Length: 208
Image 1: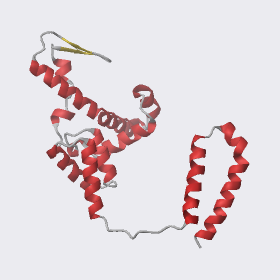
Image 2 (image 1 turned 45 degrees about the vertical axis):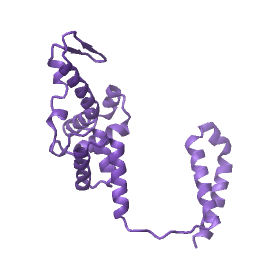
Image 3 (image 1 turned 180 degrees about the horizontal axis):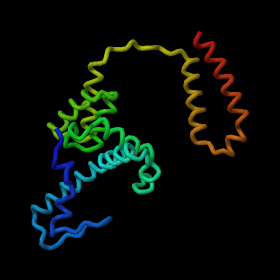
Image 4 (image 1 turned 90 degrees about the vertical axis):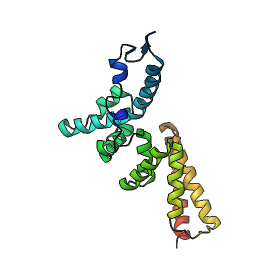
């Protein structure tokens, strides 16, 4: 299933060709570059962008198996957050090389996420997206529409006003805690705890 043109020797066109000089943060194009070489260069760079997190994930999986996790070093070298690196390693392990399509890392991530971790279902939608040349957004929409149609219809639940107030209040406190500084929290701690006690008492009454 793997597309060797996207995931194997992706940058060889640029590194081996006399028409280009590829550096850490630049690409120099020689005057001798033909239109076909320029076209292939655009395709190569696009594929490299879509594959880089797969490569990093493969590297992390290999290193972890040999030496243990190296996320701190990887964060320094790549500037990616630890969560992004963990996702990259996990996705690389969930999609071994032979299962990867010619689509980007983002396609594989979105397919697996929207299929709730079901690898076979994700592969089905990835195959369809590759065949129809879907971008990530179009594929995501197609998966969600398809799975929503297959899901059993749920009964509509009518919430009373007390329950709605309860949900809104908890959301308001959660938003405050997510954005508050340590100084602000120290100043308003007693007020927040008092609010939570009142809401918990209301929750006990509403949920009886």
